[in-house]
Length: 131
Image (cartoon, rainbow, N blue to C red; front, side, top):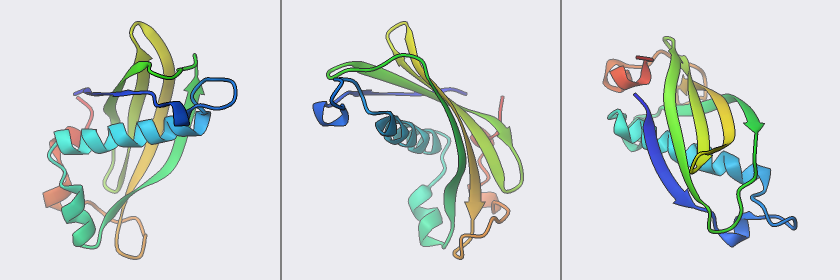
């Protein structure tokens, strides 16, 4: 399953060179991962309320091309690995036919103390596993 979402680059996300500052791509990717969680039926606010969380443990990111103000971007996200307490989501940011960014994000499900813990059944959604 590939989750797709879109956004438009805002001027304040750009640096003095006129393109999106590399740190802002992390925000774009986070927005898209949240959309993926919603799409697979993972109730993140309920998990937080129950004392759990989903932490990013690692991000590998490759910048291919720059985005500029008013670019319309499409972000694709999909699971590539799923274990008992963690997984990996692949992501891409596109501007039309141009691939701008690729990323691999390792996440961990944690308890209220921030310690990795096995996903309870109610949050172990089939959509978190690769096809």
